[in-house]
Image (cartoon, rainbow, N blue to C red; front, top):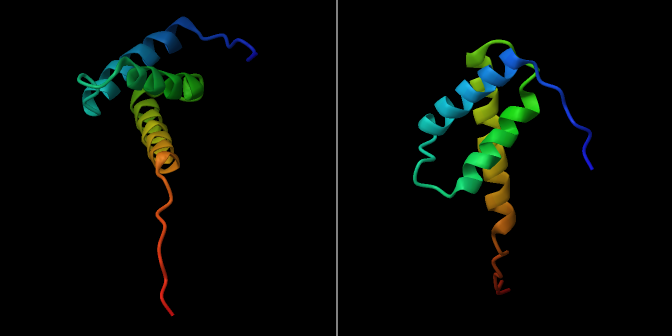
Length: 85
């Protein structure tokens, strides 16, 4: 089980603002709720690190996109190729 983290009230407000802005930028409105939850997890993972909202937004979106790219490459099946000599 993960240890719980403590967030300051101003950090929670900042993370809420970043979640709303990032969801709009990434057009998550039509996607499943799990995508917004993944984005929220990325924001929470770096939430106490940045006091600047713009830097928190940038870092969180970058983490989300990196995680999404990594998960899509893991889901791909290897393509079999026949080599003729």
